[in-house]
Length: 311
View 1 (cartoon, helix red, strand yellow):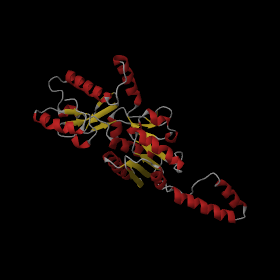
View 2: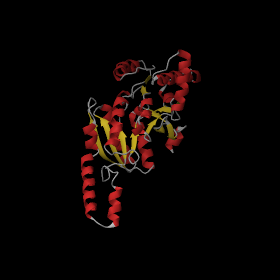
View 3: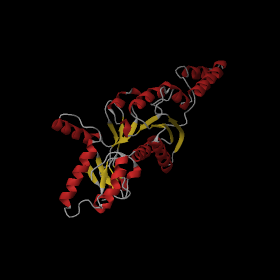
View 4: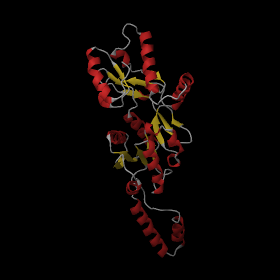
């Protein structure tokens, strides 16, 4: 069975399919539907966080902060951030959850950035230097003229676990309250894989983990040429599931969809890169690290085989 899409539908279908000894390729992103004959194809947040954290640590970042909505997804992303940071010898030093319906993020970001205390620290530094008469103090005072705050933040990398309008609202407030994206490395998940995010100057240089967009671009162009309209994002999942079913049926007509075949550790290749189903029903994907610029820029390529990930 290919589908269903939503968690509730998968939970409704699963017992019936299980009784008939039929496996399911579901599109849900809920981890709790996976297993016992249900395999998820959806883009799960945990592997994205694990990928971006390990890459950030490899580039020297050790102290992570997090901004996340107070919902199931936000909680999951922060939990995975804490787990991945610990496994990579890093720490999560600052976490802020917010209501999804927050009308104004100004005070939230101001507080998270400790803007007031850092502004006061700068004021005190200036007062001390103004009282000094030596040349070094005068030079130090001059260097502070362009600054708005003083003192380091608790984090050198910040994961923003959101997308869409909220991401575009939060992002410009960070530099406004002196969380400088040229000093703090901004990180994201596949929710950043949105053309609007690439038009936001505050996100320029940020990293997120997602499938290499080149494969999907070719798929979307062919889809539009065939049907006359652009496909929705998850259309590639339906395509990959159908292509997989077709290939397995041709290769193993006697028993194409058994658990042993579906959980082949070498995996499969689809529109969104390599993927494989784990014994627990979750999907494992080869993800790229993408930098936000005027267009997606591959900073660290996605693996082409799962041997790369294993080794």
